Length: 386
Length: 249
Image (cartoon, rainbow over the protein chains, first blue to last red):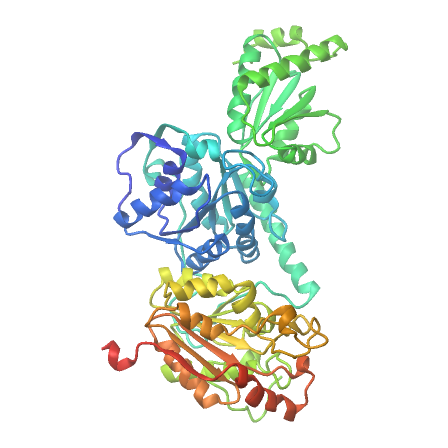
């Protein structure tokens, strides 16, 4: 296959366009989708671009069908993907549960919108629970929470590679802001940058007559006995734990003796990073941690960062969905966790700065022991602050 | 367990998974026999991919020496639609019950038919939800007693039985093949299946089938019901002829 993007180039695109280009560059052969805002333009661009590159598109009757048809294409041995949001994402979880059970490399792009139910078409981070643990299963899937247009490009490429390498359903978790915002992106051929976009191979319909030249492939979801199912899920769990160590990703800006570790994911992480940086430049001891994979969650790294801090502040456009993952990771520790919850609302660096200042002031007046400004200045002197 | 002498089975049946797991008197194995013979006749063992659904149809997940995928709620159809779209050389068969095809997954059936997806659907209509213990199905006949219609299905309360084949015939493309057969006439059923499999467009074969376990009928009553009673509401025959071989050339 010739590269979709031969030479690296800069483009000015919306997030949804970026996803379509990334899927093309990753070698996705087919997309199945059903209209829902804010995901629509992924389909629009794919539907326009696909025929030019010999790729396929089908608008299905619903997201159930989109998810299951994606499974069917994957079973046939091609890279396939779908995209959805909100109530469509709820339906999509049914297919993702099957992909989880059968370990099928289905790639789903989720552009979060407000919830519960229909809610807003614009933005939120309220689909974290669903992306990580949706379906009647254990959440054995990969979830990449992207933070910006370049991220969308690179993690969509990577999603195909990881899905096919580990045989796990893989979600690229974005949101309506990232889907619709337009900005500069660097597009490149993944092969030239050493990004693995996966090698597809058929699960069904491989060469040879089943039963004569090779055993038939019998893929099932159903099990008769509790013990049978237990053995299957235990094996999946073991495998997922091994994979987790290799794929957990995060981004952090450390601050020795940090008073506050600010934790955020997705687009909110960009605001958090800015706010933490500004405070550090003003001599305040604030660290920043962004989980990139929400499944598996970078627990060890977060624990390490949090234990060096006086407290953790979780900021998210949801009512405690990331916070719950953070608290679970930190269970057993004494580090207090506070939350800044704005379900369905964008979060600016300015409001986070204000919130952080408020917490620092309150801490100071109550006689804070460690991460005060003196310690912060001392750390600055060691060159640890950016 | 090895039966001696081995009973006559279609070549494509998987010996290792026999005897099968269906109840005595069940219509499924008869439908699967007709299907197996049709695949044998076409010698398509290397082309057919078998998909089965939830409920009793899932008991067929290792029934054939065919690549097989099992899912639920009529999603067998979109899975095979996705497969066929990327592997046009394969012949996918979606094997579903009346619940999956005509109730919880009906949107997939209607849409696949309307889009003329070249996939073959085989819907076993036994007028009950069998695996779950005999509840009312979309195809339960008026007056028929089930666990959720203990006094008999009252059309004023729960509507009339759904004529799935007629519904599909109404929305399917002119080239689609739609027929209703019965396990009471295997020769006719096999003929329908051969036409359905060879039709390069959407095809549906509904099969009237017995469920003595949930009907609570003895052998004679069971046969009477499947052979005489059911076709009074669900007439047998071809509703849409598909593309015949001579027309395809």
